Image (cartoon, rainbow, N blue to C red; front, side):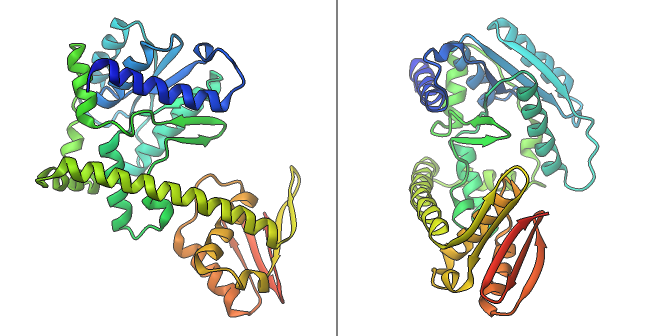
Length: 330
């Protein structure tokens, strides 16, 4: 991929996203934050954005987990300065309690979102690319994920009123590196990416051994897009279904409650039943991340049993009494 093609693709994704989320006619005035680790993907992303959009802020997070972290931050900062890109560095204390990988990722996203909110930035770009997307698909497949998990990562997701955008999901890791080579820019190699203790690294190693890996990459990404289109259609169906079966729906500042009749629920297909429950609980609780599939399946089975029950789930109470199913916030 040529340098101009890379920048055009990134620019088009951003322009389409921003135009659909703002009434501002001059999108060049919008401030855009970019999560930058110093790796080839995030570095290619932030440089390409800065060459199309004048108001860019790079956010670097130092997890303080590796001896080389400080030198990588310094190298990345020097590159950003070379291109005239403003940046901030956020520190994490690295206080790990259970799962290092998950806690570091959660801490990173919190620091990124908090920085955007503090500076009133509505758009945060992340450097996930097509290789990451395929890895996410297969990891979720191995975990037994449903449709949501197999859709992998969306191009846009709203978290705490910040639009998280992934402009290079259709581009590969090699596209990012080719772009940087064309600009004579060096990037940092994260040594932890070769640590075989992590499932994602093991999967990445296995995918690299496949003879037709580029074809697999292309076709798997196409499958993900097909699944995402199917999910959009199903989401519309779920919205229509909720509106048709809901007896009481009160999502206000003071009270969050949804109720529906068990008989109406029982007429739905199993997949729509679970989707309706998931959407109702998320709406009532205000959650942005979905519950585990087994949790939803347990509630669905309780409703199907016909026996009265009352349980707490995701800061909500789910209760069935007779033919009435109620979900309200705690």
